[in-house]
Amino acid sequence: MIKRLTPYIVLVSACTILLLNWQCRQYSNKPHRPKLVIGIVVDQMRFDYLYKYYNKWSSGGFKRLLQEGFSFEDAEYNYVPTYTAPGHTSIYTGTTPAVHGMVGNDWFDRGLNRMVYCTEDTAVKTVGSPSDKGMMSPRRNLAETIGDELKLSDNGQSKVIGIALKDRAAILPAGHFANAAYWFDDATGYWITSSYYMKTIPEWVKKFNDEQHTNKYLAQQWNTMLPIASYIESSTDTTPYERPFIGEKLPIFPHNLPELKHRNGGYGLIKATPFGDDITAEFAIAAIQNERLGKGTMTDMLTISFSSTDYVGHQFGTDAVETEDTYLRLDKNINDLLSFLDSYIGKENVVIFLTADHGAAMNAKYLEDHNIPAGYVDENVLVSAEKTDLNKKYGMDPILQFANLQFYLDKEKITKNGLNIDSVEEEVASVAMEFKGVERAIPVYRLSAFNKDFITNKIINGFNPSRSGDVILNLLPNYLDYDTTGTTHGAPYIYDAHVPLIFYGGLIHHGTSDKEENITNIAPTISTLLYIPFPDGCTGSPMQEAMKR
Image 1 (spheres, rainbow, N blue to C red):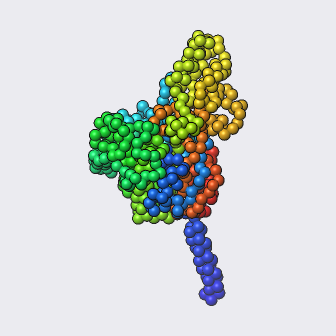
Image 2: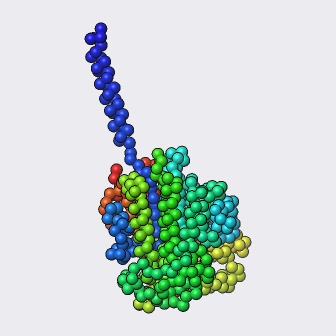
Image 3: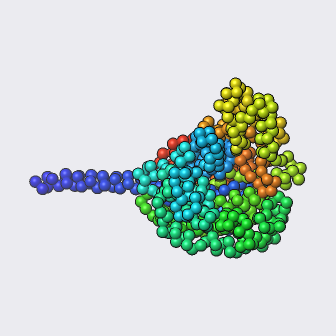
């Protein structure tokens, strides 16, 4: 009997082994996901900076990302205005202000009849400081982020944390479901958060704050990292196109931070120096270590925004020695972060992307002085002219607010005076077009039918019916609504729209692409690598070239 059963036993055993082997293969073939995703946004970084300073990059910072990662050389913003809040939100939601609603850093709220800030929230309190700078949340963002979808995909087991000097640059990327967002408090020099996320600040954050990193940096001078004569990529150390700190006669090195601190925002002074990026990098590494990001069974995500580049750029411009020095020091921060990740978790377990929330224009006065068409539009003069004209023609002024190059009109007042809203919008647009530097002024009722060139398409992508204005202006290239020193951003043109975009890590090919890619393609690319749904409002598409699948 046993002899008769033996072939069957052997057959069953063989089938069992084959089944187990098949199951093992199935398990081993499960999609490989990174243990940690890190999104890095460099505030106000133009694409050309990658190569302008290339010869001065260290081997382990920006140059390592370029030499080991995948660089999309023509990544652009497909909407206006190109500001911080819309930029950060578009990167992480995969859509434009038309969907996510971040039409500016602030805008006019018709329901509240006042200007509102993109992350203000009076229903929450500051955590980690006695100041009111923590009364913030992501509630005004109308769309999901990558981090939201990540946590939804695993029932909240992943950790998602946002870090930046600016509250909006920490809060909006991290999303609605984030474990935490931390930002810098000018009043105390501490990293703080909001009761939206937690009731008390973690012990590791308290410890970091107690170490007085801000005081350490503000107790020294800001001098150039390299000999100043080697900063040949920049203008001379002092030019009339830069704005000195309050208390300085000229914007020249060294900047004596201990003497300047009191008159330049106290602890907030650090934001306008490269040391703001230093403390951001240090805090980010502390967060990875203490929160054990990437050490669990699920993928975690950290969003980092380096904000000092924006503050320095606004004050000194795109070609100042201060700007170059800030980027050379940021390169060291990137090097330190990548080196830490090598030993902490390994490149193969990380996916990083680096981009910017917008670029910046060259100083318009500098361009004018070199016979290049450029100039300034004084918003106060423009608004005054509009009010005078409307009072003269209609006997009343229906302008509620001018913000983000948009006029908000009192439609109820217009109707009560027996006027046609479309006609009033046309009158406002007509007056605006008389100003030198205004390229177009579009009444909203004509927006969908307006000539569909790249500018109008970007305006449409940036238009949200409940938050945008009634007459939208666009300025000519290199015309700014800003001080004659330093620079700003917000335009649809290439200098504000073209930014770096580099992917790096174990699931990323090495290479480059010259294909134009919208910034809204970042979120679906990361979602594809994580095998999770795209964020709910996503309008972008995955960039397959960069991915190892």
